[in-house]
Image 1 (cartoon, rainbow over the protein chains, first blue to last red):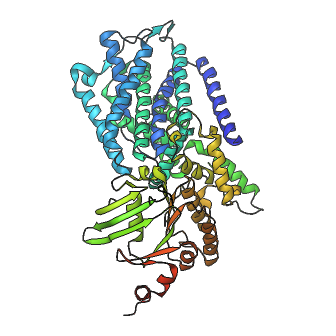
Image 2: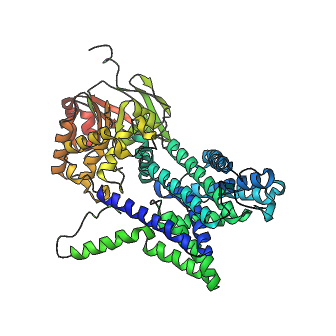
Image 3: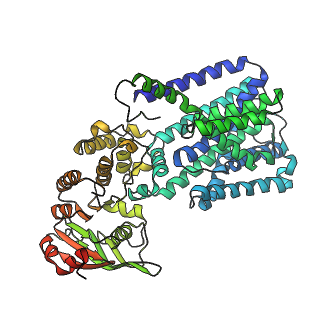
Length: 331
Length: 252
């Protein structure tokens, strides 16, 4: 399909341009971009559930928490993960989060709609409770500080190097998740989103498909956590609390659910407003709230749907004289 | 008839379903052999769709047994029954509205294939699946609309696509739940012709209100009334049955 290939090429071009331009800006923007990329892995993992499977999870921060706490505890206590073993820790972070998702999925996947949302919310808050109260392991409210970033041949303490490493993880995650959603398995998730009963009748074990998707989303949430803790240098219960899950959900909706790449747009916009605008004006939260309300009201497909809407609007104008377009192109 | 053929594709033994005090299906027994064309008729609320839901595993049976190709599948989930070679369509159109016609058919084809779990390869790289989809769409004259999202199709087209989805998995038995529901008389006649052209080796169990379709497609008819089989037999016998006249026309 030619339009689809075009879209993919545009996305690649924009990402490549960002990768080349960002390092030449100031350190604050580089850090901001690094954070946005790390967090957008979490948002994309949530999009697998929300946009592709139709499961709105409000507990995705739990998996970020597992990755982040695992990394922080291993680094602060055992000095593991600060050299070449960083790769091992990254894998462990994904694995740990996947295991937790496998456990939580057993409880959550049986439900759907608002019940799924409530169960994931409750399970996410359990993880937050652990992070907050288990002082001896998690440092309680203070969290855990990391002294320095990993060093393996390259020194991640250097902002630009670290930016490129996170960018690499982001690009790899995007590629893997994109392949997933285009695969037969990924298409089956779209079928479940559209009509689960029909999928059962067509021979799909829909529970199993949703469960697998839930675990994969958890694993990428864990990876986001591993990277996030190194961008921030600290992990605290704040990273695991409900607000972080809500942030991820709103970023996915803002960027455009079911697009994957919308996740990085949503994360960038929100983090920019939060970190940059907050230094300029003290009423930045109203701006953020206004953006959410406007997008949800007027752009249900998120910011990613803007090009398609412009195209439709143009087509409608040029075809106004001809017959009306009854079957618009897919968004 | 060989020994293999002698196994019924579908057999119901005293199948019952109660919703609390309401006994929607009461002790229904029937047998469908390979290639049989059977219809179930009956007034609204007779339990026809409930019976289909029991056969396909959407609802658990209260008592009785469902045998598919000789396997007792009474407690099996829907997807395992489908894997044996059963397919069904729905009275209320149950397609994937925001996917294209082609995507709908692709999902229906992969449902019975092991590749449905593959996540490291694009679906578009499966030539055989795409070829099969094209063949199905061509046969149903849908090829020109393959990239249209299903929600933009007319009701009649959606009813037809329902059946294409049922056929996509090459079932040995197809359950049709009122395929002509909501169709005009012209569309109904077209539907009947489409059903008559289907592979004779595939067994069909049909629920239908439109008697023209029933008499055109089915060789054998069972009448369901208050969840019970009231009468069974050929079209002639059903047409002349006093009991059937009574429940349909109501002779006090």
